[in-house]
Picture 1 (cartoon, one colour):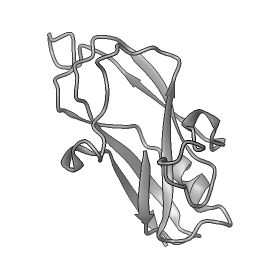
Picture 2 (tube, rainbow, N blue to C red):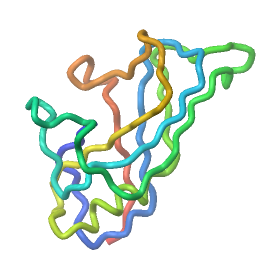
Picture 3 (cartoon, one colour):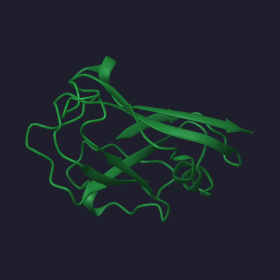
Picture 4 (cartoon, rainbow, N blue to C red):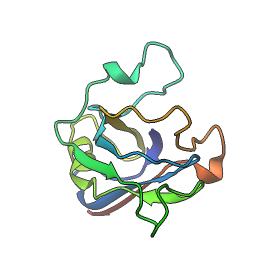
Length: 143
């Protein structure tokens, strides 16, 4: 996920950061993943074929995000169109904003990887599908 115009000055202290994602399909499986960022001070667009996510350099810092079915009472899946908030990924964002090539207004790419194979009908909303349901990056910082 690429977030443009992240207006955080270099030298800021990231107090917290969370990724908010909207499910578009029910999930009945445990999914274990790792959230990292692209290790660059200004993430390029994903529109070109030479920027494959699996080949991007990543931050050394990563945060585990595990989704468990059954968190909604006696249901064994997650409802469609539900927002989910990641654990605090402030250290991941800090690693990017501490880079010498980072400037306020640059773009940051947040990457989620998993060894778990989710079912084919599981996906998140994307900006190009529905802007109102696109992933959100919420960052609290001090400068």
